Length: 245
Image (tube, rainbow, N blue to C red; front, side, top):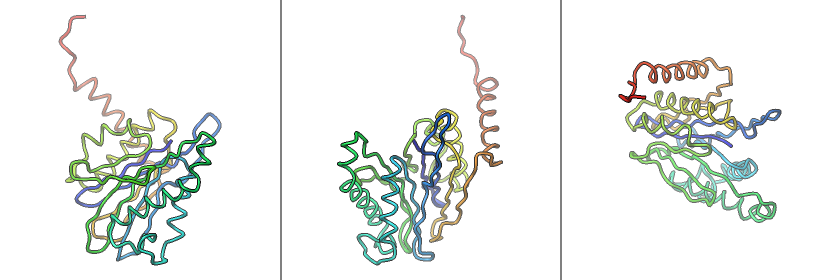
């Protein structure tokens, strides 16, 4: 299982993913799930992947295979718009399904893959999409400024409470990392390293790419302070009900 979140705010876009694909007593595997496709000064795209690793890696390989070849229907660096770039990703997903879908079905393996894809082309708006296994997608809006894939349920409450288009890019990233802390606290299949990518609107290049390892001081600070703040709110802030027991 994976967990990835993309947040679109007025200042830009935050993309955050874990890198765990298997978890057990004696088996933990780590694979990159965050990717950048950019031509600095012209366009910048970021993508996060969740689901069956063989499927998502095949999709990334198809995108890289066509990169820079100039076909506007297959090359992310030649797409005329961010919307068309999202369609290129969707077409790559369908390409993998047409090649591997039946074989996976025969082995009783679901075609399970999802993606968060966003970015900007010079002179156009910054946009953020969530793609499904069929290659179709939805777009983040001001009413719904964040998109999640993978193990989404544990980390959603903090995003619902905090994220609005007006929050700063740094606060969006901080909120995403708290969302990850909540998820990792409840589900061992999601875990570090955590990849963070921050894009500032109109920059036309990914401004920050950082990997936070398990013992990263900031991750540890979030875990300690957020857990402590929740306990303090529970015991010291929220009053007991006026019930006789």
